[in-house]
Length: 281
Image (cartoon, rainbow, N blue to C red; front, side):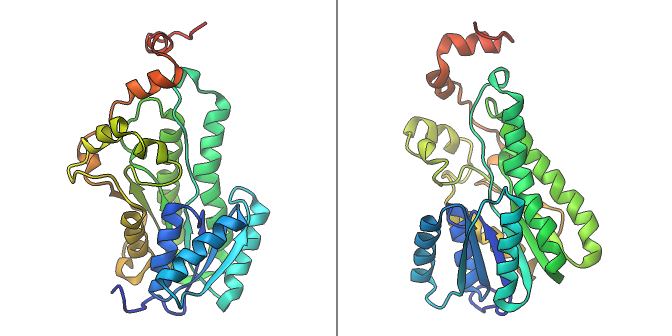
């Protein structure tokens, strides 16, 4: 149905909209007719993203709101502004998330709290305040990660946060189904973005990932956006509570061993001590 403006008349709210996946997702939603409220923390980055989208979709109807997806009042204001565009809200795409590499025994309780806040609470706030303004037929699309399913050494807090997000999706789907609202997640493999730039910039690291992708390449934001668009639209009207891998086939293999990269980050001897279950002095 792409190219038929099947989302005409609908309104979408997208957080993290100036990020790679966020901008690519807004582009496809706008291409197919949705008006979109783009939310992000930096006004300048939102303006740049808007210009990029308008270059691809000149008639896109886009509004901007600078706010923090982790702050409840910002989210409520952003959602109200989205609703005001056409007096309706049909699609939520909370894309904010993230995490960093750290050996498990060097992680702190705050690392795990932060991972839950950025990967789960930012999504919860959009859903909690967006759903009351949605009518039956509404769709929510979350952004998970293959790390939610595949164990990933040195990425425990992120792995845990994305696993929690996917359980959130299932729990929300159970309760929101009676309101006619669907919620699903896309589970990207390694995809180009500002956050993953260092991995794309290292041939040694990138080839470790690509060796685990049967399709032989890493992901681009547009790969993920196509799945977001599908889950946001009428083509997926009988799909809810699911997390779909869009990962070049990574899930049928494993995550790469990034020991060498982490050794460079913290030191070989220090990591060897940690792998024996000891805390380096």
